[in-house]
Image (tube, rainbow, N blue to C red; front, side):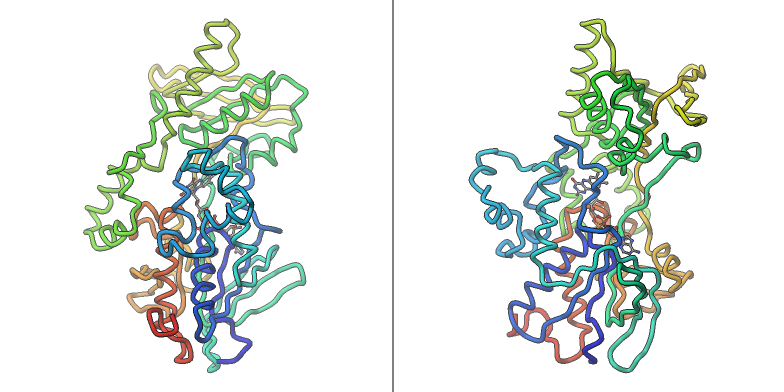
Length: 428
Ligand SMILES: Cc1cc2nc3c(=O)[nH]c(=O)nc-3n(C[C@H](O)[C@H](O)[C@H](O)COP(=O)(O)OP(=O)(O)OC[C@H]3O[C@@H](n4cnc5c(N)ncnc54)[C@H](O)[C@@H]3O)c2cc1C
């Protein structure tokens, strides 16, 4: 294969493609013909949902579900190795938690990005993927626009790990109505710290609850209101049996199940991840509201069983109309900003291929995350994350990244030119 051809191009330097890069690095260190990796990331530097790095926000997942441990507990890229290198191993043990802050976990992910043997190009947006048959092993031409202009990279395999898409209500437009995913930058731009702002947070999930707590504590003069559909926040079910839905084995169970059973299981177990809030955070918010009732000075207001029906922004604020779903009553109030904690859209494999204009007909994902069009596998094209419908609830989360990376690596090696030894060979 030509030296100009990269073995694996990753689109997106999020946890998914970092996990894969770690698996490839470990294999390269073990000997044999190394696989070359280049990852393109549109952000200017490493970041993991930087707009939601709120003080005090913790991981919803045990640190042992880092990028490698469930695949290889001896990996040099585990969270414990990171702690040791940062000089905090003993301190973390004394901390007695399985759930580090999101700020610390981001630092861990950035440490993996810096340590792993892969070329990561930041500020580089992948704009096109074309299939090709160059005869030199290249099967794809990947067009990238980066700090040094446009470039076409020839690759044997491409792994798309481009993440989720924000879901914004139709009525939300303008700088004072924004998705929570980028709340920190939007708030900084609004600069309402010196005023006594009234904020509205729309949504009833973990992000909504985190944003309520953040606004309430960071803006001591603010009134913070919450509009959500249900009667009360639903606690996240992280009990041990329910948590099994995120196990590596659950992927086989989901993948092999009839579509009707799959979708029934998804519905039953939605509150392990969607539209739910950590019980501790629910209790914290309740305690804040109750204390304010006792003191007679209210800043936090909950509006359950409500929905926003219209919003109109002018230069200084947003007039929002809210319908009480139990009575039908509609009220309108003015807010300095409206934060839409309205979730994300899990992108399906068809949408991924349509986006890259590789195919718009019947797209499926194989168990090894390789894409197929009209039932025919597209050799070398893989997707991470966009597989919830077929591979289950862990697809968009961190839970299964370690094991999934190993599975994709095995598939890449089975398919690699003969100079590269498959996993499990004497080179391993
Ligand atoms: C606030 C927040 C907290 C979360 N907390 C948890 C948690 O505690 N536990 C958990 O399991 N999950 C959590 N999640 C779910 C989250 O989706 C996963 O943790 C994880 O980020 C998925 O990794 P990924 O690499 O697939 O996608 P992402 O992390 O979204 O990374 C995708 C990357 O691709 C880049 N990209 C996209 N398109 C292009 C392109 N064309 N060219 C170049 N780069 C591109 C993006 O900039 C991005 O950096 C959280 C999500 C959010 C939003």
